[in-house]
Image 1 (tube, rainbow, N blue to C red):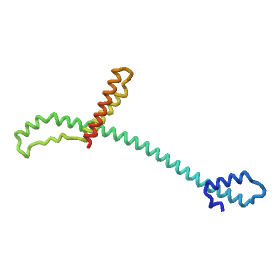
Image 2 (image 1 turned 90 degrees about the horizontal axis):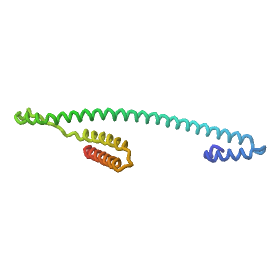
Image 3 (image 1 turned 45 degrees about the vertical axis):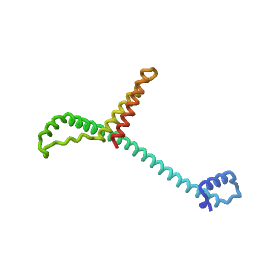
Image 4 (image 1 turned 60 degrees about the vertical axis):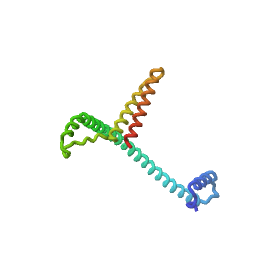
Length: 168
């Protein structure tokens, strides 16, 4: 009889019963109502505990992912710095390579691959972060400080635009 009620209906009937308890209500009905209420309460508590455990597990996972992301970002920045240095070294050798290629046989010529759009994009993103940090540290309130802050923000936005263009 009571097991066909929704949880809200069961709670309402239990409250109504508590208000009207008297000698004229059969004990068997009271026992059935209390047993059904207790069963549903146990199920609700178990479900709540399970959900709480899942929330805690998710929070732990998110913290670990954030830490992994920071570590990956640091490693990526090191790789980008290395790539930028290598690219700079290639540019320093351009004249020597062009000299070599001017007299070398076709099979001995050196090809310089200097296009590194992913590295260029990442370098510009890192530079933009630095400029944004600089801009956020500037104390405004005077014409010069406000202008420097505006210029720094514009420069950071240009770097990010270049990064987006290079990354395409």
